[in-house]
Length: 242
View 1: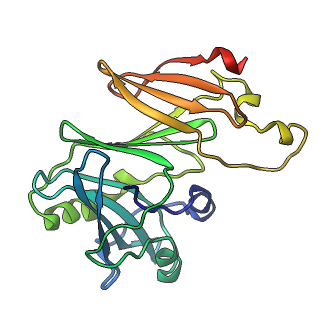
View 2 (view 1 turned 135 degrees about the horizontal axis):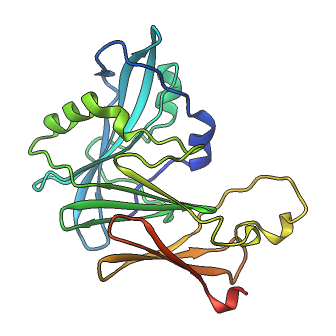
């Protein structure tokens, strides 16, 4: 089952710059939502959305935080934190599943894995691959959320810039693959923007990760090889793409 995610384009538009922290963050009362999901191998886990309130430059910033928690093992991954100026904007960016119910299904936009005590979440948009990963473990949810409140800036991810952070690796492929690979032929002479999911598949090959990346037009395909730390090793364009 795939969990429901908001479009990455919306996150790009609504990301706000963050400044120095001036007060201890706290969670917005009654903002929590949680649902139960299942990986392809049958592993069950929880998907949490909470709003963290922090003060920046004398003004409150409402930060939607998405987290995955595996009861039992306690493996915990929180994806990103984006600041908004008001509660309404923050709430708009959050999924609101029925508390304790099953997560709503959605067409696959990413590949989520839990292997050897590590969360691995692969996304690809146009010419960028983003890997969210974590080996954090907490024996209670309370301890997990206390950690987030203290270190929440470590999980920040700005889709407009995409820098690698403690829990996110960003791989740019535009230099390895020609611009036309990621731009639809119909927009070759147009300034119109576009956004598409370029992730085809993910598999472990020895200690490395092999990703299939789809071009904007068929049959364009490329194989991307990452090492165990998600650093780029090679990019091979399939013969049919030439």
